[in-house]
Length: 225
Ligand SMILES: NC(=O)c1ccc[n+]([C@@H]2O[C@H](COP(=O)([O-])OP(=O)(O)OC[C@H]3O[C@@H](n4cnc5c(N)ncnc54)[C@H](OP(=O)(O)O)[C@@H]3O)[C@@H](O)[C@H]2O)c1
Image (cartoon, rainbow, N blue to C red; front, side, top):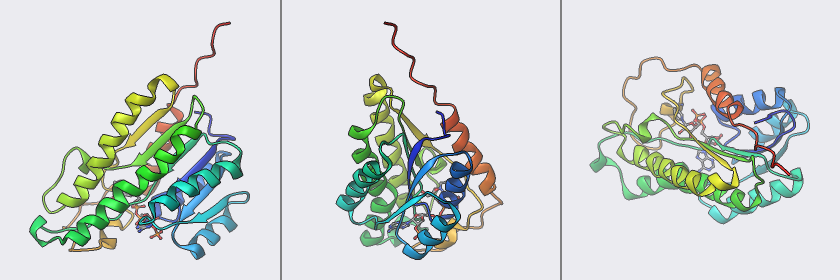
């Protein structure tokens, strides 16, 4: 897709990957709507990215995620892409994970990203892109990450099915299955302690992968008259 001038909504823009991604998108000329739960962090980011608009949300308020999407489109005039960067992990054997933690993981890692993307669907024109950061765990769930991996797998399954539904509309749906990235994500777990992790991909390397995926989306072929 042509990033220069594209109208892009990024939920989770205040996270390590989200903020690195929006800086890169801004440098490439995208018109941005930054969504996050931390108002002060959003303000700091907006100060660095002239022209970007911001909105706050909490992942638990799914209706508000959808409403934010519609508002962002109204403000930007159109919507070319959504890239969700929301997520939180937990670690430990499944019998040590409470139902409340499992629910939290499912809401933040699957239901909230889906709420943003679902609301965007009817608002997108052919050529639009819906993308979400899932992770390699979606296809290869490791021990002691059952509920986090299950939530990412749920999101990945939704993306795959919606990608099939939207093919004829020329809406591209992208499952960004990143490996471990050096963002300190594991240390922000809501339960349990992370295993020792070898060094992962750099943040720059991860953003490059996202940008490569966006760049690889081909323009809609023009209709022969
Ligand atoms: N780092 C990795 O190794 C890795 C690997 C594969 C995939 N991923 C995925 O990449 C994405 C970004 O990860 P990251 O490393 O950049 O982690 P991060 O810095 O912790 O970013 C996570 C984002 O999710 C937001 N978030 C968490 N709980 C929320 C809630 N209840 N309501 C609203 N927002 C909430 C955070 O908001 P705040 O800014 O307010 O905290 C933050 O913007 C996640 O989806 C993660 O699963 C990460």
